[in-house]
Length: 82
Image 1: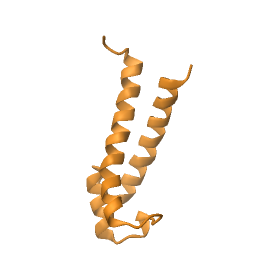
Image 2: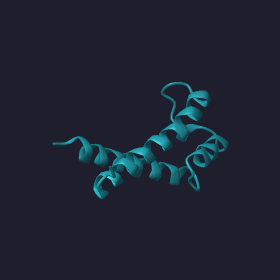
Image 3: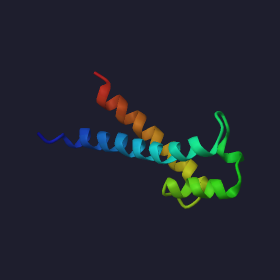
Image 4: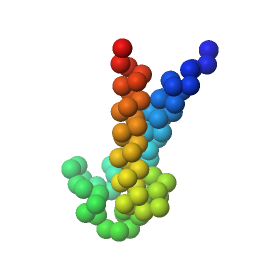
């Protein structure tokens, strides 16, 4: 059974957020200590993070993460809310 268009879009938003989180979290786990802020790290690491997140630069990655987080939260509410 195919998902209705709204549900399909919500599921895609959650999937995109999960993929982005996976791409970044693996790199962050091996490169940073717990609680470290990636913005305070050397430019080379920030560039690597941007590449892993398919963004043009670190500032673009931060915007992408914020937008993706917002879309995933909205999708979660749409999927789970009564």
